[in-house]
Length: 413
Image (cartoon, rainbow, N blue to C red; front, top):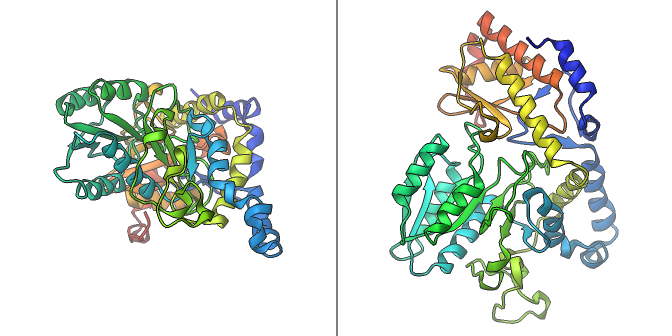
């Protein structure tokens, strides 16, 4: 049986403990929503202020050259690349996840012009489905095949049912945003390639939560956001990855000037930039880039294997501490199939989450009945997990979540 002093001992021996001081953490709050919006790195404010006051305020337009603004999409891509198992020149930071997904899907379809089927998962994040719907309408004869799978074993069978020589591309989320289930990237990618299709992974809930091996798994394309576990800030830019073997053939329809081979020649016809730079479109929102710059400075010193070990330990502890509360666990217990969150079903999940937030434990809710708790190993402690579980137990035992003020729905859940 685990007691709180055991958690104190584990915190004292935690090799990642020093990273907690890198983040702004409000007093009296246990933050279990880093899988939706990461905590603020302490160095972010000064970096954003520097860009505003010094680079913009004093350098003005000269900062495109003198402060390196122009190189940020590629430079930050290279700094982010090791976190997803990619190499230099394989990742660029730009736009939003949805926009990058549109570009990756259209590029994949153009690489397989004789095929017209997009496969995705009904259980994936809805924006991915919306984008596949929009993209399929742009290609004559293009169709979607949507599978449904909550278990890896079922996924194998589901893919076997839909994969054939008409499938151009498969899009899946590496970690399910609701349940925290982790797909086997290498196995699934190999299965897709066996049928001649291309593989796109959505890394929004895995980048910064666990080691990702895009290169080792032979992935074709990947997209992801930077405002969750990577702590880039609300609205921080997304990223897109392309395997080097596709660089010379990438063709996507958003041919803006930042994706031009030589933007400042102002040629009248588009000539694509080399490599993954072809995914760039327009002028980047630099103030958002500043926040990501600061966060990636922190991430440069993170041991991803230690991160994963602590993530699994934190989530396992929470699962064990909440085991007797009558909640329906939907996150896999097996460590190899779990991301960095724990989710439960509860018929009044929204009210329970709101009551927890009122008590200083911040998680979130996903319709229709899922309570999500994200565990960011860089700033969460084992004692945080103990205290959060104790608060949840007390709240469920007392029934205080039934107060009507917790049932009023906010726009953002």
